[in-house]
Length: 161
Image: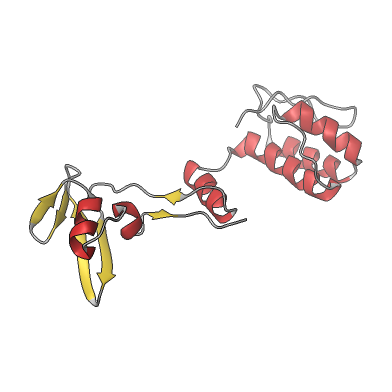
């Protein structure tokens, strides 16, 4: 997320330093000023705060989006994980989780519980054997080709919009 230096209007606090607001009181004044702005003023403010094109939305939604951008400039934006989760919920892409050392993956298949462990070196262990990938384990369990991450719930398809 890129944020430009905030350009003050006559009744707004001084500009931010390096794209961040100086103090929490500046943020409160910025947010209060947004409530009284027209759609045209909000669009101009959006352009002065972000490097993104102005969204074509109603005034109330632009007000909320601009408030988020200002707060993100001060407090930081969303984590990568939160962004991926929101994209997934919006139906854009997948919500993936990597298999990390120490992870235990449990899957029930045909009434039998299967537990796979990712060891400290990142090797996949199942039924006392070391496997090259989760997909190999999924194939051994089901007898058909599967995406191992999908089979063990690490990858979910995005919802249709």
